[in-house]
Image (spheres, rainbow, N blue to C red):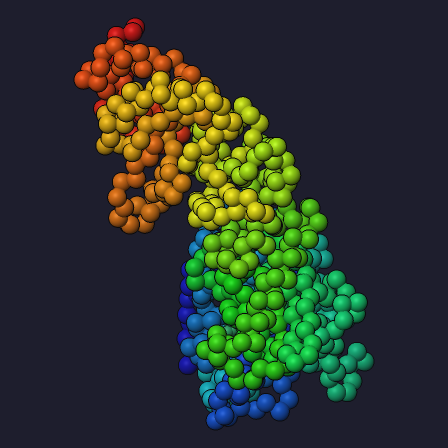
Length: 618
Ligand SMILES: Nc1ncnc2c1ncn2[C@@H]1O[C@H](COP(=O)(O)OP(=O)(O)OP(=O)(O)O)[C@@H](O)[C@H]1O
Ligand SMILES: [Mg+2]
């Protein structure tokens, strides 16, 4: 009985992209099939460790490629785990990857073919890539331990058929009915043994299972065409850059080359090897919560699990690669891993090594890294207190030093002025808002550099921290005195009456009114106490539904500004009962709030008072 089923709509759209093939390197379909076959063999071996009753044949696990130049077919066969009927429908008929909808949305927006190919490459289309080179694909499979085989077939055009295949052997075979060769379109002759052999060597040499093909002469037993050497176990000088790149593609499902390769070898009582990669592009699902993360774990060359989260902290989730440990048990579970001391030690060392590698990247690579991964790395500043200093060393931030280049903190420290104790920063919603904020005035005047922090996450790590023995200090918080002079005290007493009165008059909105040393041209600004929430953070918490008491900040006045000296004179002459004066005080406060890009508590009232005042001066 043959059933005809429809592909899920996302799958249909991806298949259309494959059939009309936006990707120029068509050869990669073979890598995808071999990679799936290899995964299927890994899974079977693992399952037989975990389930002693599984009735599976594991005597000669391998992958086999069969070519028929006359019929123009290519078959990739494995005797691995196989799939049940329902698995075929679920795994081949749909795309379960999170972020698919977003990807398709982006693809629709992108008109440029190269950019689309790049997006698809990042996403990895796996099995569907076969439709770049085949106009029909037949898959026959039987799940190990069961005796019901399934035959699946499709032209990739919206539907597929599925029917029982009673005599299917254990595992999966995928047969491609090849499109005609078209060299102009990079569609090579995939029924030609020499072509296929060289593609396997190029893309899949490191696969740890034998990949067999008929011998070149065409006569006799099939022979193994890959070297099967685990790359991480070979010495670096023995492995070519190209092999490494292909291996990276295998473990990362990214079609680009990696930005950097990291090797680690530990010998002695606890032996392990690691081969890790920093991608050159952030994966499309870096911020998708349920996306897979982590690296592959092997034990004594045997694949144990994909996405081993225990080996890297969440903020390093973009790191890909393999860890091969010698002394773990083959049937180690996630629960055991979480508590395993050796795993924790490996993790510690991997983190340090990744961070030091990033630190040592040549400038151009570092720039690429930072533009792709700055946001996740900042998560580390919050989450990984032990390595905070090391992470800070590889961070760059925008600053007032340069309009378009970010600065590392070490460079900031080198530029610090004589007598400058702190690393100054201001958080805000945009660079313009920060640069134009009144808090910046005295710093600009004195040539002090200020970090311009506009990422919402900046609020979370910068508070209370330091770098290289210097505290981070918000220029909108606390008392800041860039150069105290003896005249200050005298001034404070001159203004004491006004300040006292204003503090009472504005008591509902601010906790204090005082004189400022931050200002040169603005009449006033609003600052927080050292441990107060910044307005941005306050907003964030409220947006998350947290109940907060209103945060009262401090109004600072510029004693050199005519509006402020005028207020002082008016207050001295008219006394504190004058209602008009109270309104002016409120206006001064509201203007300061507007100048830093803040939201007025009562905009209508502000507008009304201001309109009345303007009327009087026209
Ligand atoms: N030879 C096979 N044996 C068993 N299952 C397979 C085989 N080929 C594919 N599958 C199943 O179909 C799923 C989809 O394969 P596909 O290659 O499209 O995606 P993937 O391998 O999960 O991810 P990637 O995009 O990295 O290749 C696989 O996850 C696997 O469960
Ligand atoms: Mg795959």
